[in-house]
Image 1 (cartoon, rainbow, N blue to C red):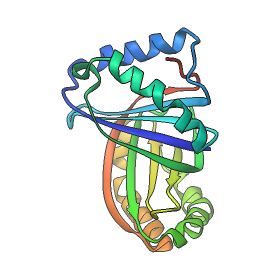
Image 2 (cartoon, rainbow, N blue to C red):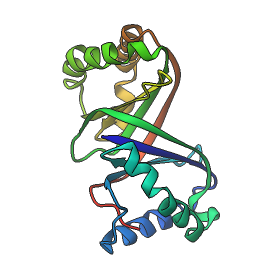
Image 3 (tube, rainbow, N blue to C red):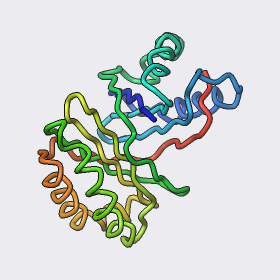
Image 4 (cartoon, one colour):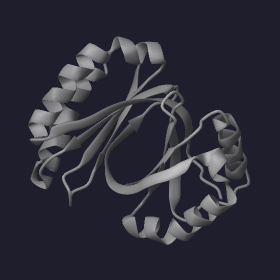
Length: 201
């Protein structure tokens, strides 16, 4: 499976209207070809939004791009924000439970050769420890084998649980980075605004 991540920046005062618009589109049943599910992460204070759409393949993502462009034309920028980037990743780990309300995304950069070792380390070492933390609701790990970039997003039942896990998360993140031979490029925190299994235009 692969994921398309579109990042947006701008005024989030109308973000709830945008969420309502997306939900309405999903309810029509007119799906984006090949899309499996959709995840929207929101940083209200920082004015940042991530839209993550999941597909079976990179070819399916490319085939859907004209529809994403059309959606961008139909939804005004003052509602959706200014799109700042679009990236495509392989989905290495996808284990998100119901009830996820908060997320922490760690962006790592390193050698493409360390991707598989890092994924194995996360599955075998990080996950068993993280799953015991209060409020844990799962993980999503995305990898770009061409560039060596990776993103690991952990999910929590509340912002309070996310905050309480910070110290242990710092330790586990450093361990994962060491295993992958990576550097930690950024750590960002989000609200889980949408987690849907049906994607419509």
